[in-house]
Image 1 (cartoon, rainbow, N blue to C red):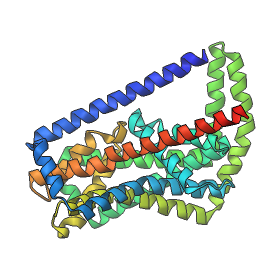
Image 2 (image 1 turned 30 degrees about the vertical axis):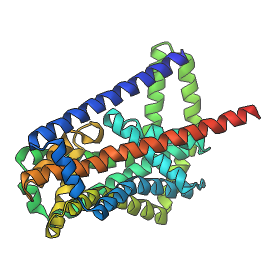
Image 3 (image 1 turned 120 degrees about the vertical axis):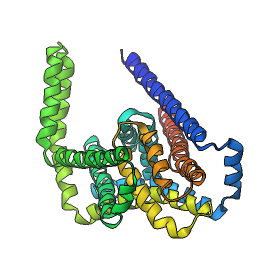
Image 4 (image 1 turned 90 degrees about the vertical axis):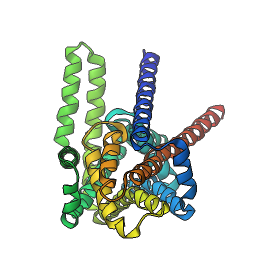
Length: 354
């Protein structure tokens, strides 16, 4: 029974991954066709790009993973479980990779939790740290978005009406998620009611043994979870550090586009407006439960960029910056996750032999 469940889960993950690849391939193909740019033209453009600019874009992309890992490390350390930077990078890589290949980014946090469990971190600490980091992650985007609206409201007006609706809806989704995550940390009664409600549902399905097991584990964990949640809100320094690191994470991803534009020898005077455009793109990408906002993000990027440059440059910038900030980022994350998994597996095998 357990083996069938594992096989079913793995099959679902593979299907999600293949669907994501299909959607990504369709999007890339549509972008290339819409631009009128051939692969040869794109390659020539990349060869003419500035190497320092490309390298800065790559470092900025890596910063997206690194700063999330640092934020998780800060939170976990505050709760008494210090860990290495390399471990934090793996936790963040697992989040980035599995969020990118599962609907609604549903696989990211469980994947991070898996590696934390392997490192001996208790489940209540893991749940608390992941929820708090989600709050800070969301608040970071909301903060950047609000500042953007105040400083560059005219950039928002340059988008078409349908794009404006996507951006507004994305911002509302972020606000709703921030409130939900905060309530889950502050109001443990929500977790209690949800857990025991699920156990009651299982009883109705005549799964009494599983229901009893869930109730026992829930009763034992809720008190520890409440203590963990209380401890994080009393650590003002930790909260500030986690928030600032999440700000840096978001800005590092946005900066990939700026460095890519500089690498393409774009007009540096347009960088502030390009920054504002990219922030609106980030807000709008959250409006749909699609990994990486594939399709929506590309659409918003192209529409926004064409307000600042000609069509060919806009398409080339979209392909280069999106390729680095999303597709290469996924590849790097996948490699980090695979290496970490193999190391954990090797350690387990050595322990069994002893």
